[in-house]
Length: 93
Image 1 (spheres, rainbow, N blue to C red):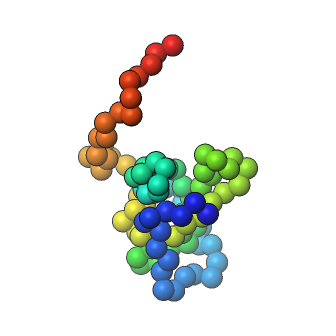
Image 2: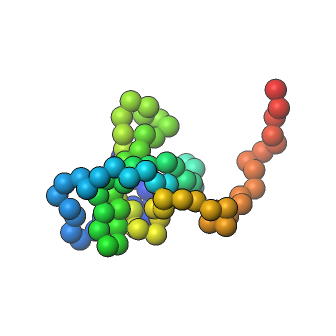
C-alpha cells in the first residue's frame, strides 16, 4: 500500500463488497500530491467509501483504500478541480 494522507478507515465496515460503481477519487500522497484517479467503489458507509484502482507502479495488481465520502465522486466538474501550475515547460514532438 502506498499510504495516502487522506486515507481514513471507518469505525464499522461492511463485511462484503456492495457493488462495483465507477467513480473518481482524490488521493493525496508524497509523490503526486493531490491528484485524481479513476476508481471502482466496492463498499461504502454513510461517511466513507472503499475504492480499488490500478496504480501506475503496479499495472498487474489493484490497490485499495478507504476514503472519506467527500473525496469520491461519480462526476468531476471543472469547478471541482483547482488549476495547478504546470511542472515545467511543455515539449511538443
